Length: 242
Image (cartoon, rainbow, N blue to C red; front, side, top):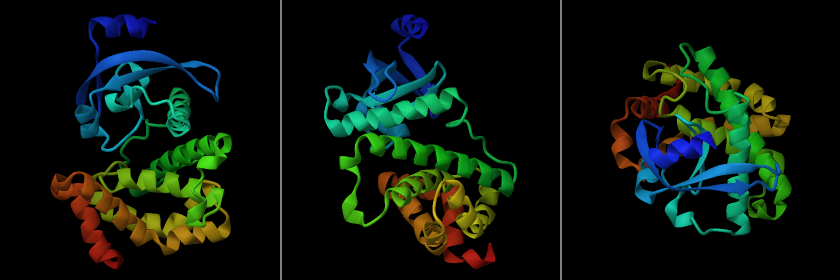
């Protein structure tokens, strides 16, 4: 309620280095938790600058955790969109518990690996909780188990942050990616993966890194000049020398 009082006077929040104007704010009752969570709608183009192509985003703003939704989704009430919101409510709770969105840039490769694993675990858990309530939305056509899919979603989300230097300084990115490939089986097991699934991540490490980098470039071509992404590209060319 204190937040709503402040937002009425100054309806902006700081997130991702940007100031975002909150166009509307409302309560949303969670199916999973039976509590009300704050949802704020943000102009599509502005939100796209910090979170390209997102339908909802649990953001650690200067006011605290808040679910940001693009205005185009303001009237969305489908089962799919409801499940997306519930996924973000899981992240809000993780933020309140200090388990998500607070992983700092590591000063060393081992610290970066710990932060990566925490981020991937939080995403994997959110996906597992989401799909446990809405199993019909699980993509059966991919031929993956629920365990494999949830770990994959968590891993790739963390990897997308990693290739932009989200877990270590750009001068450590190449060493981090090499260390991540070697540690992939043990780290994937920490996320709940079985031995065969854990091995799958190690075998496809370079391909997953490449996919994460290409996704960023498809969304924002100007990221080609990002120092961390350039270091990622250099690692992909000669990973054995990193």
